[in-house]
Amino acid sequence: MNIRVFDSDESLAAKAAATIFELIIRKPNALIALATGHTPTATYEHLVKLIRKSKVSVSDLSFVALDEWVGLSPDTEGSCAAYLNQHLFEPLQIAPDLIRLFDALSPDLLSECLKTDNFIHAKGGIDLIVLGLGLNGHLGFNEPGTKPSYSHIVELDEMTRTVGQKYFRTNVKIEKGITLGLKSILESRRVLLLANGAHKSEIVGAVITSGTVPEIPATILHQHPACDFMLDREAAALVETRR
Ligand code: PGA
Image 1 (cartoon, rainbow, N blue to C red):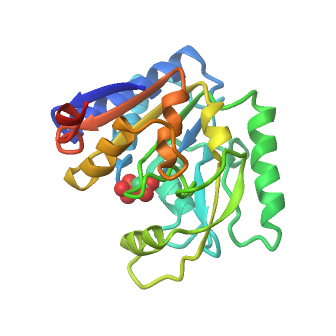
Image 2: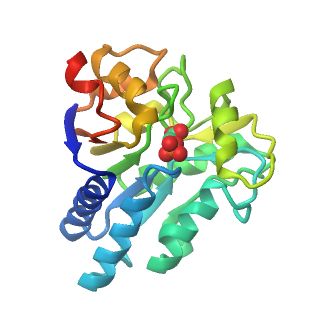
Image 3: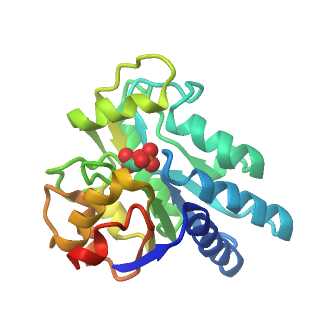
């Protein structure tokens, strides 16, 4: 795990976006997996600007969403699909057949998992995955205690249900999630794990100082050969003292 600390969230986002952009230049038909949440928003804004400015074609890129709240439609504000459509797919005019989103309204969620895994396989694997870090150490909806697997359905952790309300204007019932698994994450060729803000400093410190333990799913990334853990100063507050 390559730990990189930035002076501000702005500089973190600029570097993360530049890293994704470099991949797009190098491999115009790359498959990119994307987290949602508050963490990567500035990164995606930078990325859209970089792509627009350079006029590079993104018509051969493919995207897969990291996760989704079970029971929410893609139109629900706060759903992962709505977020990615708003921040990336609509601004970049990505064709729907190049995007794989979990249909969290499907009566057959297992087949949703298979469809996502097959999409990834058909594209030759994930070239780069952007991840945020949950306050409980989760990656996507791989909650504490999760065993490494491919896409799967999850009973959400109490903390995820509570913290997750921040994405919605009204109180939304969120009990289950559907997510790429830890194996899907580990098999991605490149990982950008992003964390910003003082509220993340405790969990960031725990991830960095702990070996791989199931109680903190993000610690599995210690086993990844090409993972950048990109932090702003606030999120990194405990890193120097604990390392
Ligand atoms: P956040 O969520 O980016 O909104 O902090 C991260 C996560 O829970 O994975």
